[in-house]
Length: 55
Image (cartoon, rainbow, N blue to C red; front, side):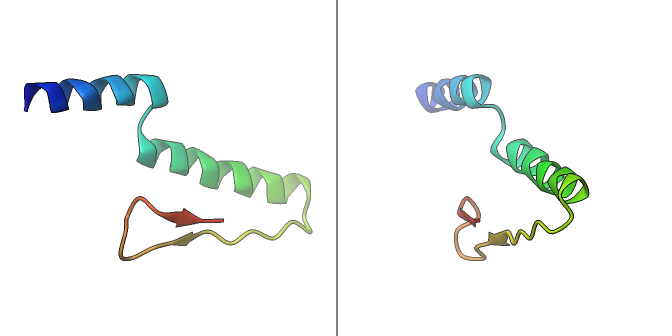
């Protein structure tokens, strides 16, 4: 269990938090639509697998 926790901590340091990355992505797309008003985006989150996002 200690190895698993250490692995999770290292991955979080290297890749940052998954949820935080997607929050930034949502803001990016909102800014993009301000700059380029005709831009359309649709982000769908899977209800079955929380880590699966479709763009």
